[in-house]
Length: 78
Length: 178
Image (cartoon, rainbow over all chains, first blue to last red; front, top):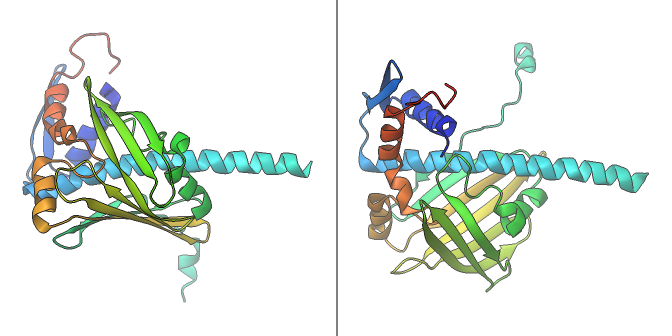
């Protein structure tokens, strides 16, 4: 995983108040946030993040396919 | 009157929802911007499926993907994670183009989990609902406890720990742009 990807993940966890982070110099330290979750809720949140990421990639594929169809459609009419 | 509402843009839900609907059922849903015909293709053509099933932002990769999408046909997905591989496989029970897919998840040790995906088109967008029916309450509880579920490597459960470690060592050298 890239550093950018990792930052994004930490950002999501931070927004959900599952972690808090503090940056001192170059080091950012994560701690568990105020919102303690039971195991099932935490697991569902992780699972949701996986599916969100999956669907975001799926959106790109769909967009790509639709764009190609439009282009091909134009060629056929020409 | 309601005239003020006219300017409000139609917002498509961008967030997937996940719900444990019953002791044995887990349901994921999300609306995708595109017709069901194309969305269904993205779920059933391996060359399209492998472009999104293992998201780039997760530390897993889809090494191979074989799908024989017809009733009784089999699929096999091989994932890579930190040098090791995991396989997920099963067979298709129902294949209704543009509307419904049902498959088994046979990689587990016990009874199989059944996954049903439905595609509902509405004005150019498609509501996708992924429904997992586990063989028992205990099976779903165990999947949650171990951090795994169908199609999701157990290793993902360790992601939180990894996050904390990597974040703590964020940009330790000058090599990475901050």
